[in-house]
Amino acid sequence: MPDIDSTEAEYLREIERLAIEVVDRAVDEGRLTFDLDPDDATPLQRAVNALGRQLRHYHFEGDGCVDPDAPRVGLAGALLVRPTTVLSEQEYVHICERLGVEARLQGWALWHTWDQKGRRITMVTTRISTTEGMLLAWSKGRHMVPVKPPRAAVAATVRGWIGPAVRSPGYVAETGVTEAAVAASVPPCSTGGSTTAPSSSGEEGT
Image (cartoon, rainbow, N blue to C red; front, side, top):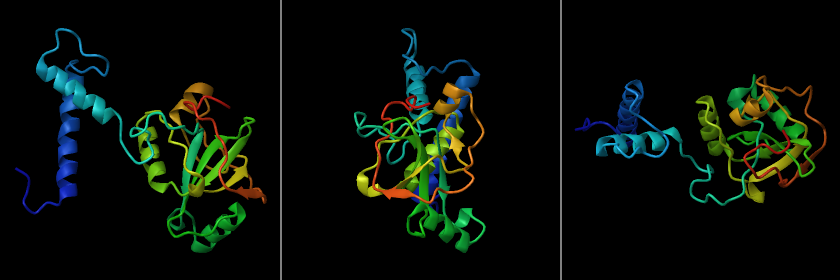
């Protein structure tokens, strides 16, 4: 029985914590599989395996689970640029000016991707929550790439990869490159609207 004073979010976090602990104990005992259940698996083992598969994939807006056929954006890396991630508000304003976008309070997500010719570009998008969820998944070593954002969610595309950025596990596995790329400066020319990036698993253009 949860604490009557706990909020719904706190209750759900506690349930998640307990579920993760169950899965971790199953891993320690060698009883967990993320593949198909073996024929001799008990109902309890099957339930724990299903729990582990669900927890293995962290769900968030734009992860593609709702529409698995939606086109994806192949990414080498990503970062968030917000007033809280830079040295000063003026620096944030300056960065936005050089990217060719407004200095939104919510900030911007920068996605390292490729254009149709395989050239490196940085997509400047409003997909903040998607990027936060994606970075969390990447931090756990889980490769995933997001659904391609609609045109209205992409404010600009900039030549080259503007960094530093967190590298995606898929890009690291493909290239062995783990360090974050840092552009010497933001190119003075950016274009509004979206761009067509690789829509596969992110291997194109690597």
